[in-house]
Amino acid sequence: MQVVLRRHRERTLSAAWTVRVVAAMALSLSVITLNSSTVSASALSIKVRGNHLVNQDGKTIRLLGVNRSGAEYECVTSHQVFDGPSDAASVRAMVSWHINAVRVPLNEDCWLGINGVVTGGATYRNQIVRYVHTLESFGLYVILDLHWAAPGTNQAASQWPMADADHSPTFWKSMAATFKSDHAVLFDLFNEPYGISWPCWLSGCQASYGSSTSITYQTAGMQQLVDAVRSTGATTPLMLGGLGYAYDVSGWRQYEPKDPVHQLVISFHIYNFGGCQSASCWSGDITPLTKVFPVVTGEFGEDGCTDTFDLAFMPWADQHGVSYLGWAWDATDAGWTCSGGPALIEDYGGKPTAYGVALKEHLAKLAKLAKSFG
Image (tube, rainbow, N blue to C red; front, side):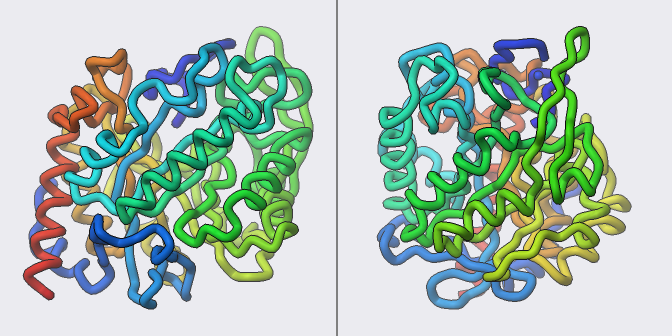
């Protein structure tokens, strides 16, 4: 998410952070398959086929779920990987919301064990692997997202404009080698590019970070990150967010990276305080892309823990076969605040905020409709 409002409750350790349409939900049932919590991890599979994602049975699915923030920042300064529970009970609470996917933001330095992070290397990697397996044991797909990254000896303690050439390709080679036999995961190659051009997005460039003291560094383009994953033999679906904190996907098709296994997914993020907030924008910018690629809204939500924006967006996304994952499954009783950004829950037992109620009830309706349609 964009750093401006610190809406994640992400800890910026250096400078800076309309209607319920049941008919629309019914139209979406032909492209929805919700996973049962009884599905074993080994049975789960997801891949791109045409402009859809399909499961192990070849059925078209959408990813409907939540983001579990924490592993991108907690490891930098504390002896923890997550800022709350990551056990089976906490995942069971998620599943009660009828989700089928969880997006897990990650920290490049913590995974690689570099630049002086407190909890990194094997300790961090093992806990992430364990958490992925826990999620999958409940029939959930997992999106692994490179959320925080930084070049050279700069610590990955905030949100930089683009992946860095120094460490990000190495991160993805390691990640891909770790999970290439796990067919229930997707990789989100870089959370929210900003302040760069489309040619830079594709091929890399010299970019600048910071305001009072600017740091110039060499970025890694999306093509380099795709190549890093594919060099390991991994065929994992790859999500690529556009410019402007992943709001802008206008140049995505023109600058589409080459993927030898044709497993690319368009990712975009949408909030009531960002770009592309209206149905006319969604229909103009997103709908044409859904005819060619799977589209996943990796993050969506609204500040203040209200629900007006989300109740307009979700039925639109249902009607157009767009996946979406709410930001964020992090509890207000554990330090997150509605004034600071979207928080889905009041506690890790799954008690929803007003914003969380909207997502929970909407997914329950989809699940009920899917069941009634057999």
